[in-house]
Length: 112
Image (cartoon, rainbow, N blue to C red; front, top):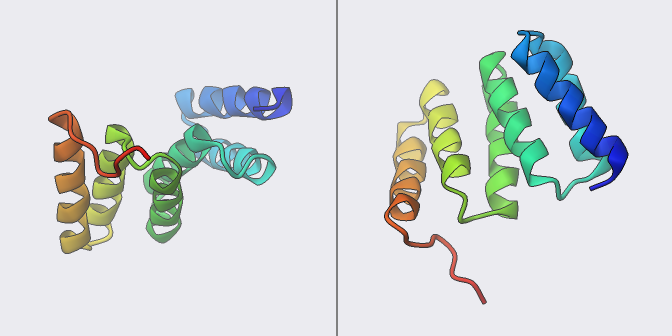
């Protein structure tokens, strides 16, 4: 990760901490534009978008996060929450099931 992305991410986290969600979203977006493989950026963007009510975009960011790190428990849990808020209960249950597998020490995607 570049120092620019790292600095932007830290700034976005600060914005989030003080409740400036719109600024945080803009900075998280910029992070993933600069580094499309930045898992933490996608995860944070998804959570911030969910908090601002942009559920479809949040789900998209959440899906990108699990694509990058398919065995991340928090990413699956967050995606489940996004689906619930969007009324997609079947998808939420599926994501929750994957989070449960991970919480028990299993893997959603086996290492190759």
